[in-house]
Image (tube, rainbow over all chains, first blue to last red; front, side):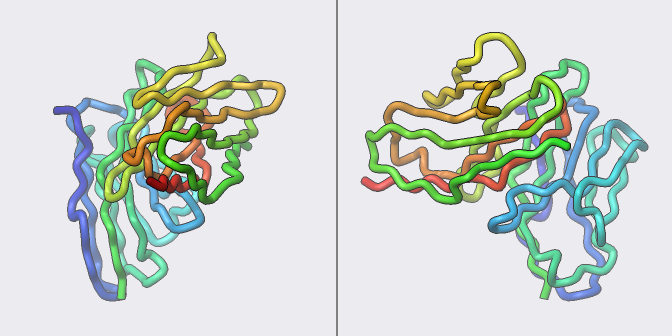
Length: 114
Length: 111
């Protein structure tokens, strides 16, 4: 089954404790992206990647890091989480070659930073 | 720069009534336009998309949307809403794989 898998789905952590949210897709998509969703603000892009070893900042990259060492994985790293990073995070992927633009989303990771 | 406006934060309809969710966009060229739905506790799922051609596009779950270039709009419609349609709806515009999303419209369905 074609899917985007995020882990963990739920996480409560404390300020300053490094964490990683993993994202994996099994569709051989070149494009992957991270969004955060906050009430009243919709979806805001954090980082995206056009292919392996190619990443770029989105609209709200501060406090986050990403890496793209393999095509299927695109982890989101919070080196020193702060309470303002409490949010619902979504990973998404897309096939660049067919130019349809459809994004496939994971089910989301709800992060609470105390 | 591209942008999307969804003027309605919440929409409440009765089951069986018709629905229209508004979306206005700003984009420098012919836009790629999308509607996604987010059911509670789920990720986003594509409802429909417009790239070119017929300005009335059909999607899944009985939804349709009409592209009106003169009004820079891409409104989502459904003739008869079901309780299971209660969800968050996002309009998106942009290039083929880096869309900009609106802030979403929450649909509440009364029995």
